[in-house]
Length: 321
Length: 296
Image 1 (cartoon, chains in turn orange, purple):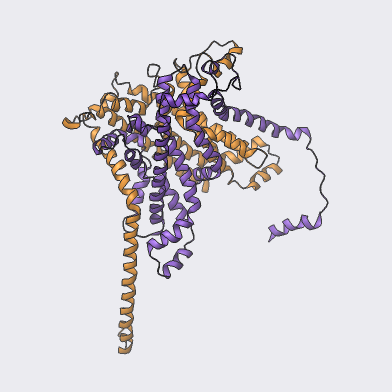
Image 2 (spheres, one colour; image 1 turned 45 degrees about the vertical axis):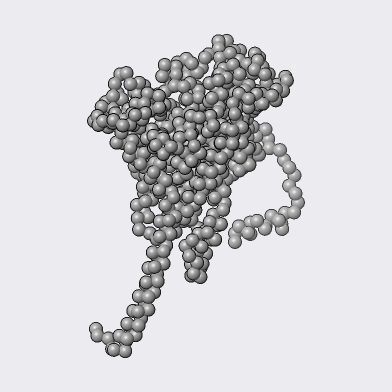
């Protein structure tokens, strides 16, 4: 094993050079490392201060009787806030139920319509990008403005919708101030806003399907409808899973639509979870209840995501087999 | 090879133009049906915006006329000047522009930097920090707003531009978009400049950031639209009219004018909606690309 002396010298010289090289490289890495920290610093620091720290506070405050207007004498109250959420007078179960109802109709509704439009817009034809632009516009328009348009269209006397219903012998309906029309109107409005988004995502998924699949099926005599259900639909399944997650997460956050259209009414029939949290935190200064509901919202959101991801992962592996 | 062959064949062999033949009616039915459905969809999805603009020029009576008129019988351009008398919409506009532009600028710069670092630089804790960001994406703003507002209050940032802008700046979505962009970007150019002795900063500033221009454009447009449309955060962070944005001003208008003056309400909505629709119509390809590409 012992090397001749001459070799050793060469070796040691080489070692020195190598260690210099190593040193230089390490210092380069260190420089890169320092630059890396500097580059991610703005995002991470701001995110920690304005996001993670309030998140931590949300969790801590949910076990206290924190009052945002008078934070001085905050007391630990255990699980009182959480049990209080489900008391009969809190109104929270109703808000949770409304949110679940909105999600249960908006998510599948906007996905089904979005997929139909994406399928209709698949492949080149005249006017395609015009139609896509028109259907997508509500998703990009500011919610407050659009909601004001809807409140005008739905107004009982002189509103366009009620005027259109008149020839059918339907008396003016006060859509936004009576049950169950208020929540139906809110749901229709949110679907109207969301369809453009689901359509764009489905369009992207459909455009990745090789045209040869459709051509082969066509040769075998499959019609448009058959090809849609046997080729397009199964191949956009993973996209659907993604849209279910993003759809559920975004409907959990509904506030502005309800605020402008109905202010949560009539009689709390359109109040959502976030609207309830807003009322507790900013009108009743009941910070404990507000943060407890926030924690619950967070748990629901994370559960939805994790369950969906699991489910999707399994389905993808089945597809690969 | 086969592709070029196929393409060159018809050009050399068949110079005779094929006569334009109309398809038989039965074959055109699906196409006609498709257009019919899409035209109805266009009316339902875009019609409300057209109606909004038309009504914004009508009188209050005509806005609720039975039966409705399509074009205003008399064009009331003064609806807009009345709007500016009712509430300082000029100020609201200025506030919205300041907040949207600076938030967008901040989001683009910080996301570009972080996206590059996560994609191209090696440093300890990189993956841990990135996973934390991933997890934070699952926490909607709506979960943290109560303590966030009391934090802003203790900083004295309620009713201030910095309060409206700074908390909006970190964009996880932006970091993802740029990380993805730089990860997919061939590393040869950067390696070459690295061998030539360019520092990280030089590489970032002179090579990588300029290369990302198309991505910066797409993200900036998307981010501007979202910042312009933002309502909930601005609504709870501000209660003085001096710092109202157009969206908050609209809800003020709604509570003041209520159900009586829909023409003014629609004029206000027009002011809020039209800039976004114009930006969208001009840059829709970038917006669509950023939305559909960034999320897969």
